[in-house]
Image (tube, rainbow, N blue to C red; front, side, top):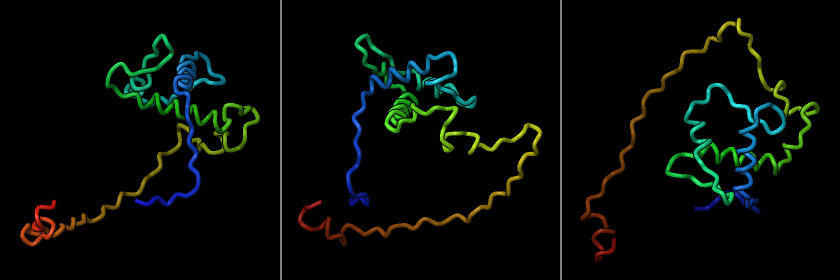
Length: 149
């Protein structure tokens, strides 16, 4: 299979245990400020189960105690790595660039605003799946050519 990408692909070797320590410390912060993690109200308990599944041993290594899911924690660790690599942690929030100000891209809707009326979904006709023509074994040269395959 040929890839369409060309040139160098950046590869970052991450100190995952140190990054997991940073994320864990951020999760334990009590008051909003630099490094505080905000969560939306709609996240379910499954997310927090994944976020807290790994355990840190006395030697500083993080590991899974069983076969449970830990993707939420791993994704937060990778996000923290991107924050560091791109310098987002150095943003001065009172003077943040326009792309980082959520007021520039959030659309506020008041509580007493009318609900938007969505158009009815259009149903598409079901497509018939094309069946591949089955070749009988006696007509198939791969099967009848001296025991190969």
